[in-house]
Image (cartoon, rainbow, N blue to C red; front, side, top):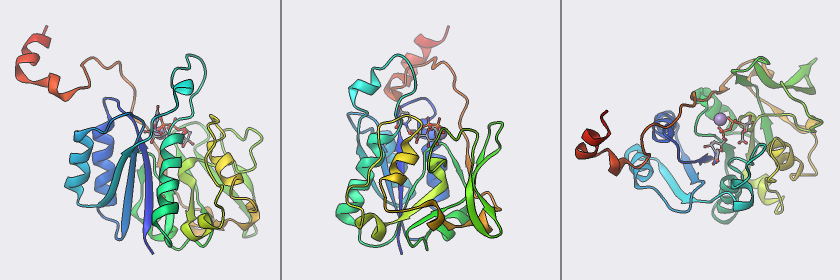
Amino acid sequence: PPLYIITPTYRRPEQIAELTRLSHTLMLVPNIMWLVIEDAYQINDLIEDVLKKSRLKYLYTVAPMPAQFKNKTKGPKPRGVSNRNKGLEWIRQNAKTGVLYFADDDNTYDLDLFHQIRFTKRVSMFPVGLVTKAGVSSPIIKNGEFSGFYDGWIGGRKFAVDMAGFAVSVHFLHQRPKASMPFKPGFEEDGFLKSLSPFEPKEIELLADNCTKILVWHTQTKKNEPSLPLDMAKYSNTNLIKLKK
Ligand code: UGA
Ligand code: MN
C-alpha cells in the first residue's frame, strides 16, 4: 500500500535545508507520495526544484494560515493546520488505499518507521523522541496493553500525542468524512484524533516493538535573526558586494 506523507512547510532561512534533508530520507522509501503544502500565498520555485531533484512522486501546493491567526501578536499560532487539512482533502479526493502520516519538515525519521506504519489498519501510534526535558512522548504500555500517554504536557487531552506520533489508514479516513484538524494551538493532534470518532485510545495499534523504540525525533533547527533577505535573487554577486560591510 502507498504511503501519503503530508509535510507542512513555511518560508524561513532554514526551509530549503530542511526540505532537502527530508527529501533525502524519503528518497529511500518505496511507494510514497509526498504532499508538500506551504503556508504561503504563492509557490516558490526553489522548493519545486528540491522536489523535482528528488524524483519522488509529489504534490506541491499552498494553503495559507488564515489571516486572523497569522496576524495574532500574542500567544501560539495553529502552525501547519491549513496545510494538513488541505493534504487530507487531497487524499479524500485522490486516494483509496494506503496510509497517511504527518511529517513536519524539521523532524528526523528512521527509515524503519515507514516500513512499520505502512500496515496501519486504522490508527497506529509509536514514541516520538523529544529534545526537551520530558525526553519522549509515547503511549504507555502496561502488560502489553495501552495504559495512557506520557508527554511533557498532557493538558487534559484525550490523545496526548505529538504530531509525529501516529499514522492513519486512508480507508479509515474515508469512513470518517468529517475528520479534520482544528485551528487550536496545542490541541491540533487531539482535535484531529477526536474527529476520527468513534475511535478510542484502547484501539490504537501499537508499533515500534510495543512502543519501546524511538523511530522519529521531534527536532528543530535553532532560530537565528535572519540577517539577509530570504529572496535568493537578492544574493546575486552584485548584491553581495553591497551587503558586505
Ligand atoms: C509543535 C508541537 O510540539 C508538535 O506536536 C506539533 O506537531 C507542531 O507544533 C504543530 O503544531 O504542527 P513545533 O516543532 O514547535 O511543534 O512546530 P513547527 O515545526 O514550528 O511547525 C509545525 C509544522 O508546521 C512544520 O512542518 C512547519 O514547517 C509548519 N509551519 C510552522 C507552518 O506551516 N506555518 C507556520 O507559521 C509555522
Ligand atoms: Mn517542529
